[in-house]
Length: 256
Image (cartoon, rainbow, N blue to C red; front, side):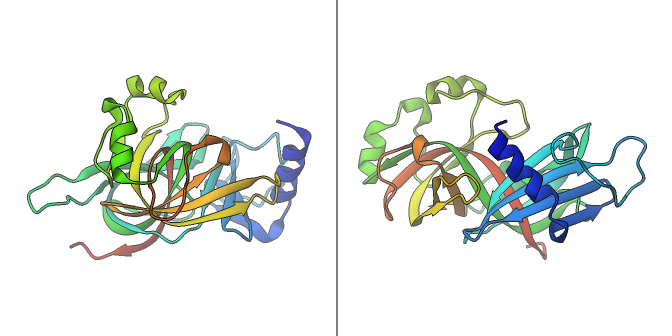
């Protein structure tokens, strides 16, 4: 970690106005004017009581980071289980969910995402919810038309425009990525760009794109560094993107 990044993290961690204390430790949250969020994880140690008001060392005590982007899209889904997947960090967790079937007799789509503020409040499962989902892009391919997309994509990644599918380990090398073992690590999102805005990261000073992508399951916010984009990410263009999914539960809704 470089000194500038460490100093930025230290500044966030010392901002008492953005402390979110919960029984398993505390988060320090930072929100940029453009909607980017960074949640720093400071879980309790094995001998520390729940909800402790302790002093943290910004780097030494940091056990995890959740990155998110506030956006415009929400998707309805059923959350079946919530799972804290790191024994040393109870503040980091995923939701194991399913997206509704597209047809009356179709199958629901299994779906996994990292939850923003996982440990803030108890959430007994199962429940139905509207979730704002942000895909943090590792690769993006953009095409002017659907026909161009169909001609260009290798057959093993050729899915219908609007599809969301989990990537398997043997597919990752083709995308020039390293597969991570985190549950639900990588997803392939294909859709049409509804909105595209270039923003700037005020911590690093670097530009990034926020894209609102319409899929057959609903609208997903995709966040991408210009360096991972191939093609023109203009409104109306078709994109396919390899993303890590992060979500915020906007509200619980009555079961359909």
